[in-house]
Image (tube, rainbow, N blue to C red; front, side, top):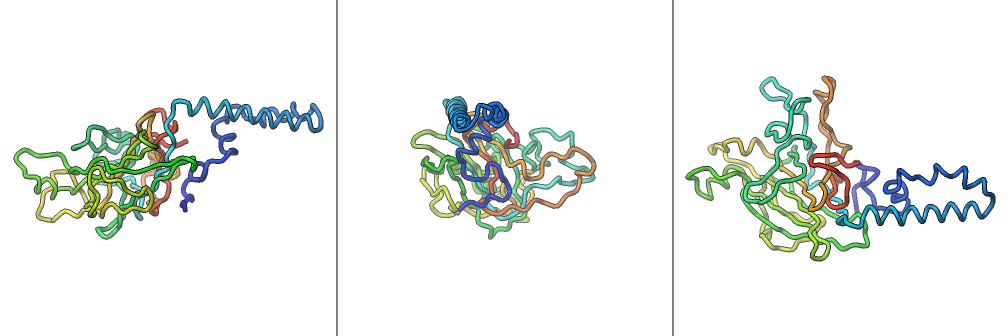
Length: 294
């Protein structure tokens, strides 16, 4: 069901062994293996297993007592991750670029969307290499498969900020719509994903409950050549954001990160396929906005 290739460690179903490796990594039972085994025979094995069990219980409780359930979010499109863009003789994502940037589309610096919405994303990126016929879809799944996660459209609004004197139609023509999807465990809101610069399909309206997996919500927007976007839209793409209601959403570290040297200035774009892992909401994977998943 899941396409897990781009993110090996977290892009899979969490098992008891993942918990032993991830949550309790700083207390690895392996560090004590020699001392335990010297106790001899079956008693050593029993002791080791008991220790592992106790560490797992403590780790799960301390890591999850106040955390929201982790939700695995997949790419909404077939396309590619942002590049280190080159405009007018400047590498827009090289070293000194800081948030919020309108030019650098990588998630460590790219601006967040807020028009018509009361909050901004923990990270944002422009997903590129799409056309007006590329479906924009929702892909989300609980990291703990025993949990039930639902999806609901919490807002459909404009992609662009209002300009003085313009009509609703003129504003819409500059950048299309933004669809905000919330993810819930029962009545508890875990976080949101935003899909910006799209044309929503029928049925995608505020308050609608939708499928959390493989649900088409729209198609990328294309501005008319006769319309001035006033900097809101610069080509066919999907501006994508994730927000966690507690702690921070993180993004897949396997994709192209912030460039750190001149050798990083050019690269081949990282291809992404719909449902490829792009990040987590919920859980506790990041200590600040715009951080990679561990």
